[in-house]
Length: 58
Image (cartoon, rainbow, N blue to C red; front, top):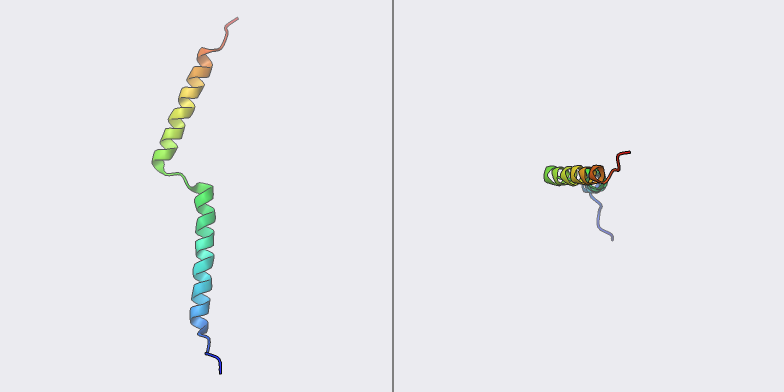
C-alpha cells in the first residue's frame, strides 16, 4: 500500500516554490543594492564629464 499524501504540505510547498521563483525574477529585475546604484551613478557622471571635455567648440 502506498503512503498517504499530505495535501496541506503539498499546497504550502508549491506556494513556497512559486514565491521563490517570483523573488528570483524580481532580484534579476531590481537587484541592485543602494551602494551599487550610487557607484553606477558616479561612473555615469564621470563618463559624461569626460565626454563633455572632448567636445569641440566651433
